[in-house]
Each structure stands twice: as C-alpha cells, then as structure tokens.
Length: 205
Image 1 (cartoon, rainbow, N blue to C red):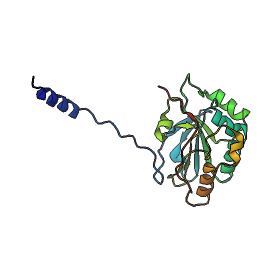
Image 2: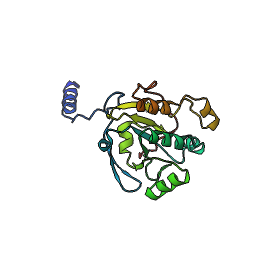
Image 3: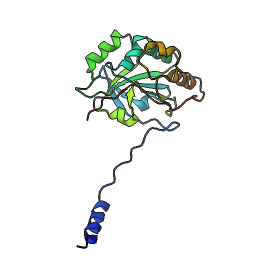
Image 4: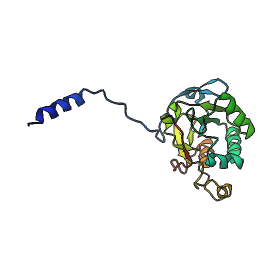
C-alpha cells in the first residue's frame, strides 16, 4: 500500500496547527518579565510600578530544608534588611500549589513572616505558578535581582554551596548578596547567572 498520500495528509494537518508560543526564559541585561501579583495582605503588586527601585525576588517554601537553613540561621532575614537599607523592594514569592509542600494562604504566609522575623516588602501568593513559570523559578530558594531601570541583573542560587547545613554558609560565596550590593552601587554583578539549589518549586501538575 502506498502510504505517501497519508503522510502528505498528515503533513498538511500539522501545517495548519496553531503555533505554540515560544518559552522565553528571562535574560540577563534584558527587561525583567512583567507581572501583577497579590500579596498576603490582599494588595496588588505591579512590577512596572516599582521601576526606579532595585527589586529582589526570592522563591520560598516553608517546608523546604534549604529554605529552613537560610531562615534558621537568620541569614535571609539579614539579607532582606540589608537590601531594604540599600533601597530595594524585596518580594518573597510562594508558588507552591494547593495541596503541595509549602502552600500557604494569606493568614499562614503572614504568620510565617512574623514567626521567623522576616522582613520582605511583600509576600506574593502565586498558587497557580504564573509568576514562577514566567521567571523559570526552579528551586526554593531561587533568587533574582532586577535593576532600578527594570533589567534583570542576577538569577541563581542564594550562595555557592548546595547544602542544608548552616555552617556551610560561612565558606560559601554569597552570590545573592554580591548581586544586590553590586546593583546598589551601579556596578556589574560578578556572577550574573549561577546554579540555583534547593527543593523543586511545587507547581501544580
């Protein structure tokens, strides 16, 4: 049997399928992906409204031991306060889906912030994973730093050692801190892209 007519028909069918949008990962030096999110107090946060300020994005999951290391040691809280002192807006993002590890509603998010004495500007609730997918957030923590003009300056790990041990933080290179301080000083980030480590972001399946 000559299968060429069938192959031709199949190729024609494929030819009329609508084109799927290409997945555009964030690019260093390019405008950071824009979004509107809702924080744990019900406030709408528009990224474009924050232009003129350095912005730090931190993906978190309160059940993740890698996140636990950063908060148990107080290092993430200190970094949040130091970034704020440098003029940054700190957005902690929770992209865990309902029923998954790390999912929080507004009340739980605020309780977590209070109990660990954290100091983000906003905690953004992203249960559908829209902001997480937009940035390609892979782990908790996963850090991004945006310049005051709105370009992405850093994306990657909080530091250089993929460990849950607090003692390893003293010998790790502090990638996120370096990036924040460089952007605040108007300098180039020494390591603009690094490997994020931690628990996978618990998106909806």
